[in-house]
Length: 387
Image (cartoon, rainbow, N blue to C red; front, side):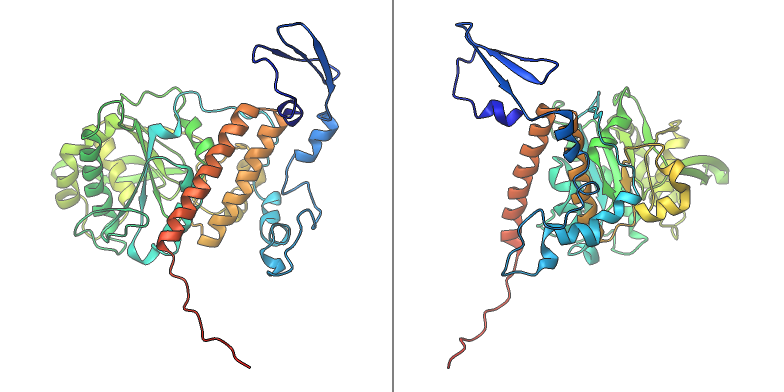
C-alpha cells in the first residue's frame, strides 16, 4: 500500500490522502483532479505478514547461494534455530503502542562485564540489541576500546568484583553525567549483565508515568533480602533480580553518591558478590522502596516457560528481557524479535514507526560493520598453489 503511493509520479506537495472502506485511495492535488488507485493491501494480503518466522513455513523464500553453505542461509537458520521460539515466547501480532513517557535516549544502560567475556558475551551484546542504543556503559577493570569499557580501577575481574564495579562504577558514571549539561544527562539508568538480552521497546514502557526527578527504583522478578543495618542491626528489604535487570532514577543516583564508598568498604560483607542485593539494601535504608513491574525474566525463554508455565509466562505479551543468554542465542533472539516487531508494525500499518525503526536498524548495522572492520584480524593468506 505504501509502496503504491511512493511510486506515483511526483505531484504537488499540497495533497490529501484518504483511505476508504473498499481500500481505495483518493489523491487530491490543488487542481482538484482525482486519481483512484486500488491497492493490494487488503486484510487477506496482510495475513502473510502476521509472523515472518512462525507463519511462513516455506524453506525456500530466499535464494541460497551456490558458493556458501546452505546452513548460513536465512531459511535454513530459521528452521533450525529461530522457529523454536514460536512455541515458547508470546507472539503479539498487532496493536503496538510506543512508550508514553521516555525514549531510549533518556536511559543509560550500565552493563557488568569482565575481560574473559569481551570476545564472547560482551561482543554479542554490543552486536545485537545494544547496537541500537545511544547511551551505555560497560563496567570492567580492564580497558578494551572496541566495546568501549568504562574502567573501574582495582575492581578485579572475578565474581567478587561485581561489588566494586557497581558501587565505584556508579560514582564514575555520576561524575561523567555531572560534566554534561542538564539537557544532555540521562534520566534513568538500567543495570544488567552482559548475558542479558533486552528488548528496549518493551522495557521503556515500564517507566510510563514515573518521574525521574524522584528517587525511584524499578524492577521485577523480585525477592526478599536480609540487609545489614546500623550498629549491627538487620532489616528485611526487597530486591529486583540483577540478572533480569532494574532501573533507578537520576535522583536516586544522586542520593546514593555520599554512601557508596562507605557501604562497599565498611558495611557490606566483603565475601559477598551479590551487588544487586547490596544496592537494594542501601536504597531501602535510604527510604526508597521497590516499584514492581511486569515482564522481567531472570532466565532464558525455554527455562522461563518451564519454570512459570505458559499461562503465567504469556500473561505479559511484551517481555523486557531474558538472562543467562549465551552469545549464539543472543544473536538468535535479536533476529527473532526484530522480525516480530516489524510484523506488528506492518499489521498495524504503522508506517511512521516502521520507517523510524528500519532507518535506525540500517544505520546501526553499518555503524557495526565499521566497528568490525577496525577490530577484525583476518587470517593469514597461504602460499600460492602451483601446478
